[in-house]
Image 1 (tube, rainbow, N blue to C red):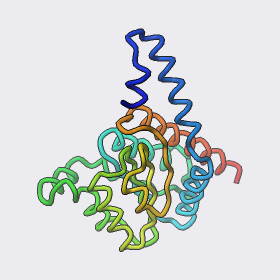
Image 2 (tube, helix red, strand yellow; image 1 turned 90 degrees about the vertical axis):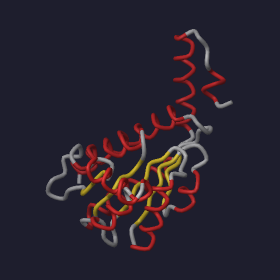
Image 3 (spheres, helix red, strand yellow; image 1 turned 30 degrees about the horizontal axis):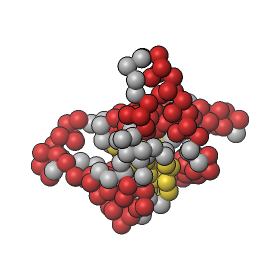
Length: 200
């Protein structure tokens, strides 16, 4: 039984308050030093003209798209842009790769075409165990691409494989709070970078 099962009640107002309280607890467990490191990685990639690729499945695919939007366009940095792409956004490419090579290949084969040494790969996953993400990290390692894992639950295999980890501590199967926190990290990072660049 995870925390969402524990706090459940048919009283909607009480459940709402308990959910908010639990989300606060989850957010309190995120290491601000890991957020700082992630922001520094993004700034470094920007200065070098490197591309940052985001990947994820399901709700995390949507978060990957949201990150790409908020960093590449939302920061309003055009003279020295954040070169950010979400590899979850091209449905024809993903379905072609899935159909021809299998779902495990939908991200790694895009990286083989688009990524170069020195780029950054950010994988978002609650479980940290999705095989297409792990395969992408294996390829990134061999190609000199820096890897960042944004995870939840216990971080899974991906957390151990990554060069850099930004972890959201939740119990297993708590997808809602995990993905809530991942989106808050997105908005935190975007809000910081937009203002930091203006002041530079």
